[in-house]
Image 1 (cartoon, rainbow, N blue to C red):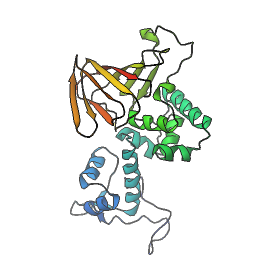
Image 2: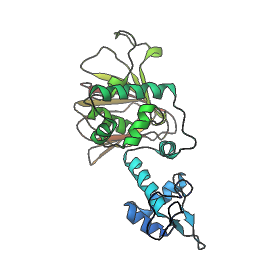
Image 3: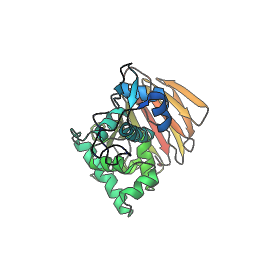
Image 4: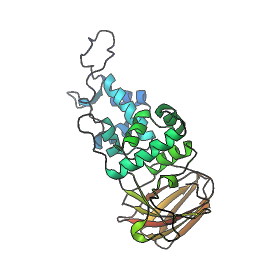
Length: 280
């Protein structure tokens, strides 16, 4: 991290402009100033997001520039951006090349925003996201989690379903090889649309890589039903409910309750997930 943030345009008193700012905060003080735990700073270091210098006694030391970067990391973590996504957003030397799927999805998100007459700043504020993160998503250089994307489409008065491309006239039949698809979470979450012409329900196939999660809670109007086709998933509903679902298990709950999920299996988990009405 120190290499990424070794200089700062506004030097404090006694430090010349352009001169590296001294690393003087130990981990406890840095954590207190950022508003996170010391264990969070250690975890971010293990994930390669931060890299404090070490004192002769091997204590971690952070500079003011390091604290500025830590605040950016904390903000992106609050926005449910995972470690690879944060690295891409922080990197200015080797930005990730956008893939075709993300370019299309980013273009649709930009069209939705512009159709509502919103600036990037207004849209980011309404969704509780940063301007830089939203800009990267629209350019296709960053992925997003299910939770963050739901926050964004909700701020637009839309749903994730509107992001599915329908290049042809909606059909009663959706063939296995022609399902509209959204890929999220650095492609660890794949949502396949199972109906194109339904108006009262929204059936989808979720394919979750091992460890994939919603990376946050979300909620919306309606009711939900999910059935585990293969694998295992943990669902948190509301403040107190937690369910471990294995192959063949099903769950129903009001969509208005905040919910999140995680794939706990060591292999891909596949879920039939139905929302009614189509508000997700």
